[in-house]
Length: 459
RNA sequence: GUGGGUGUAGCUCAGUUGGUUAGAGCGUCGGAUUGUGGUUCCGAAGGUCGUCGGUUCGAGCCCGAUCUCCCACCCCA
Image (tube, rainbow, N blue to C red):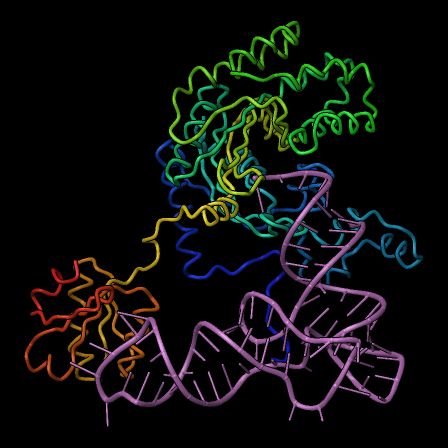
């Protein structure tokens, strides 16, 4: 009792008002997922540690929340590890973690999905389209728009190489954000073009270093990008040979022409261009989003192999992406199922929430749920109201009876605080007359109605 | 994981070169109104000043450590 209660760093409580808004986001996303033929899936909060490690790169492994083994975890630690520690010798952190923990909280929804597909491959009919809306956990340092527990809303189709899937995902993204009333930019690139660029530079092995530097272009500028590449061991001639990247302005048709002149001789580049063209040609007109080719878009190099997507809000101050996704050719390979190509998209509900809040895009009527409150004058009046309450609820109207016979001011204040638009007053007088006094809280007016007129009076 | 800032009532914040019983606004609760909220008036409750330690006759204020939140980096939704 002495210490103030609190919650772990980077986690949050969601008040009823926040939950109404969060549900609005989840429901909008979910209904679009369903409309495009995706079906729900859930996986456990915990996975085996081995399922997760090594899937997100070195940085990712560090950010996985490990769960301490139950019982006396220390007792089970291998004797040679204990000996080393006793002598004060270094033990590799990963090794020690593996000794003390064999479970971990999920880091994203894609890897558990891949695990699920491999485990249940004989029960599934491909292409398999699933959506998943669940929290994920990362042991990151919290910041604006960055939490240690947050929700992802994923839709993936696995077992189909068709580019129609990419096209559908772009339309799906557009429809979700149109539904939320938010203008966004969908940035698209193809991992194959980045590979081609590294090849033409003569240092294909530096692709990751080049791309992570180029990814920061709009943030730090061309000079700093080149500086960072140089620091990572990219030669000056290589840097010079990828310079055309920075001059790829214009419409997709113009960008495509420039890319063909620059990288067209390489088969990988041809393939990437073919992919992107198919997406641009088949997408058609969008409602709320702008689709643009962004040659500096890199993201998720761990498993993406084809098209990659990222969504940024065109309104509000949040610069980070609010959705991301792409094509992966061999995600299930690491779990023993080869040749399963898939493509997916992930919506960051928590960041979408922040943007909608800042830009005032939440619908105003999300506020209240109860439409009618019966006041409570005492046992006899409450029992009388209870019968009417059932009728109102039967008509599909949310209603409640104040549970205690406290003074009227408190009951009215309750209705006011909760945003309840109508209050039914049934005291001694009304019971005698067989009427109900209905007060419109917004107008401040009230009138007596018969029981049969009650529903009409509050509709 | 690296660097910087921050922490005083439920919330937003004052608090003088270190000096007695730490303040305001909003909110909460009670009353004016024993059948009427949102406006008004009156009153009350609520703080081991993030935590632990140090300097000092004396610390909300100075020093150290630690935690939290915020900002930048890394990375990411």
